[in-house]
Length: 523
View 1 (spheres, rainbow, N blue to C red):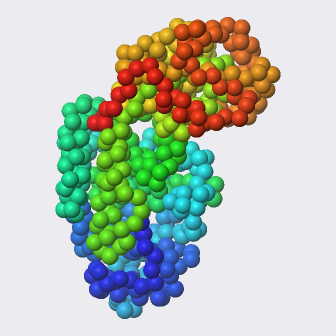
View 2 (tube, rainbow, N blue to C red):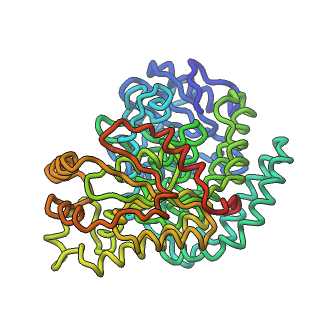
View 3 (cartoon, one colour):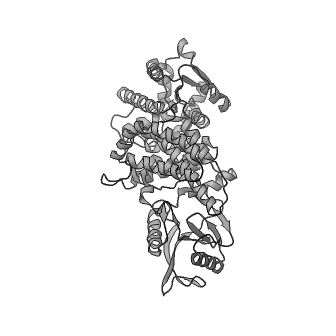
């Protein structure tokens, strides 16, 4: 959390504090302070000056270091927010009479940015109740594209190695222990010790597969912003390359964790699933809980550092969140059943938010198998199309593989597919039995006239991954195999033409019997 003041508190280097106060008066600016920077807001520009401080994870005392990191911050942030980041300006003169630009010896450097509107931060939007799911969808797509284009860590670097990931987390616990949090840290050390052997092969595999990249590094709600109709991240972490050369899921995990900390699990899983749909990185889900705990510990330590500098110790209890995440795990499987236009995806979207689940969409994963994006038209791109029997078998096999990965890691899973054949449903029921998790079929239905109207309208909009048209719908209606009597015992039927009580639906799913519920905290 930042603090806005009218004068510079004297808890750091006196000359630097005097310089910032002089500039604040000269510019007629407001001051926003973090534990490592001052930012002066003059109504048009934001002038960011690094504090000459030394902390356990950085050393800004040398002017040459602050200069270098100003230029590094400019480079990094122009990747995601080029319209905000303008240049680096040398400050001349004296602390009592500073000058922006000009000649003479340089006494400090400022990163000049374009000031955005008050209330534009996603943290502010969330507090005001104006943060929309569509904002998070757009941010998820932007970050998926950003990660896909980001530089990949080379094998000769230490970034993303299992020992580095472990060491970073354990050092956070050391830091928190020094702030009097020994008992909580002991519990988390035990959790990490149990998780590490399982995660080692995954971490190594992700590093080899190029999932460790030059990311943002500090992706919480106060570092994401609405710029008109656009939404993006800013304020990338510049002072330590190791903190941004990380697994892409650790990067987005920060924002997921922040939403969870603010008790908005619905938005957290909305954002997470939008990112996974865009990136296709479901195979990394078993590492997600570790990254969420790690990010919660980062914020917990930052809060205590700021309190030590005189800041207010307010906001979510991130250490309590870390403990809760380490203890959670409620694997269960739900598959949808219904023809095109029956509302499976709409109900699945609302259910994943309410139940905080991972959703796998057949329409999206089918296209991914052919190298297509969700909204690409397949007919012009793939000779012979992507809806033949072999493609359908491959799609369901991929869905099963990804569902097994997420379930084994203790997550709730929704598989959004038609599941019109009994053999397809039986295969996923067997998966649930193999893993010992509850199994539910969500049967979505609506009157035939409504189905036709929805399919027609969806095709005209072109805003959905499904390419089913009216002809496909008629074939489905003729060929769909109804649920058997045995299947109906584990089925929930929803009339999607009627109002949906998603709270009741989620409660019914989460209370569903049918297997042993995993509580695999260490994954």
